[in-house]
Length: 110
Image (cartoon, rainbow, N blue to C red; front, side, top):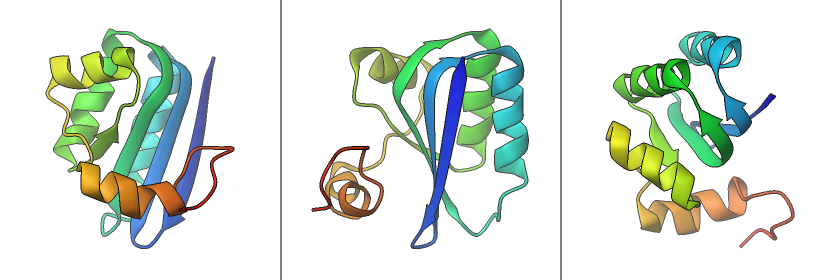
């Protein structure tokens, strides 16, 4: 099962993926991001992703070509980003820009 949560803040579209990024769910995310305003910075949070199949990997590579940056805070999500050469959000940007406005559920704005 895949859960996709989006949030638009300060000129950026944050897309959080939770669960299994596979098949039809991955294709639906491809459709979602291609329909979004191209002026928005795209950030994909893979931290809560538990499994990504070949279709999901292809969609992530496609999203990378659109200029997306990625958040990966688990060993699995970091491995995926490393293997697919997905650019991570810069640490400074992640700590200041993302933590307060795009922070994880249950985290306090900082």
